[in-house]
Every structure is written in structure tokens, then in C-alpha cells.
Amino acid sequence: MSVLTIIEFPDPRLRTKAEPVSVFDAELKQFVADMFETMYDANGVGLAATQVNVHKQVLVADMSDERNQPLALINPRLVQKDGAQVYQEGCLSFPGIYADVTRALKVTVKANDVDGNEIEREFEGPLAVCIQHEMDHLAGKVFVDYLSPLKRSMLLKRLEKQRKQAATA
Ligand code: GNR
Ligand code: NI
Image (cartoon, rainbow, N blue to C red):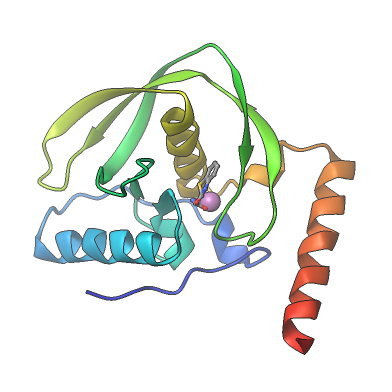
């Protein structure tokens, strides 16, 4: 097991589109275990493989307070979305930055589990936000892409400022 390095904006590798997984072997299971370890270590509620510079369609999530409901989706495909919700999002690739984003309230996703079985699941509320946020990462998209140019440049300046302060602290 290992904690992997999370890449941060504006690293251009965050724009890479992930490739589908076709081999469901022990190496994949080890990678998923490392992604969970990395997500829990960073106190995140989700993590996409893109964020650890692995460009395969793999995401993990756990929105439970007890951190005991791990969910791993391989090759996730959105098959239905309904309604809308606004949720304040953060991202491990944008430490300390938060912004309201509007997304679907409910999503139905087809995916593979770590053994390669086809699964279909419905997600609603905060977990649906998380799944959409992670699926965006796999497509090379990040949450600030949804903001107005003004709001985005404000937040990105804040990110720069926080980094400079952290460097001299
Ligand atoms: O830890 C995370 N928190 C979060 C909060 C609101 C909406 C989405 C997220 S996902 C984020 C972890 C992360 O960056 N996943 O890509
Ligand atoms: Ni993120």
C-alpha cells in the first residue's frame, strides 16, 4: 500500500483524458487500494486516477462520516441525469479553494467494479456531486471550469497567494 502524490492545478496533466481499463488484474486492485489510501490520507471524499497522474478511468469515493463506505468505479459512464443542485465544492488539486457549482441532483452511472463486472448505480445529493466531480477529472475537466471568468480568476489568484504564503511560512 502507498500514498500517491496528488498533482495540483495548473499542472497540464490534469487536462489528460483517461483511457478505459480493459484488464482487471491484481495490479488494478493494488492501484485502487493505493487510491483509497491516498484519498483517506488527504481527508478527501473522492479521488480520480487523473489526480495521481494515472490516465485510466478509475475513481474512488467515500462520503460517509465514518469513512467506511468505499466506492470504486472503473470505466464510469453517465446514462441518466435529473434535476439540479448547488453544492460548495473543493478539490485536492486546488487546496484551500471552494466554490459553488451547479450539477445534476441525481445521476445513473454504468461502470465496472474492480473484478470487471458490469454494474449500474444511482447516486443522489452530495454523493452524486462527488461522482460527477470525479468523472469530470477523468475527462480532463476541473470544477473551476464551471465558474464565470471573473470568479475563476479571483480564486486562482487566491490559490497563488496561499502558495506564496505557505512557501515563506
Ligand atoms: O475532497 C473533496 N471534497 C469535495 C467536496 C465537494 C465536492 C467535491 C469534492 S471532491 C474532493 C476530492 C477531489 O478533489 N476529488 O477529485
Ligand atoms: Ni477534484
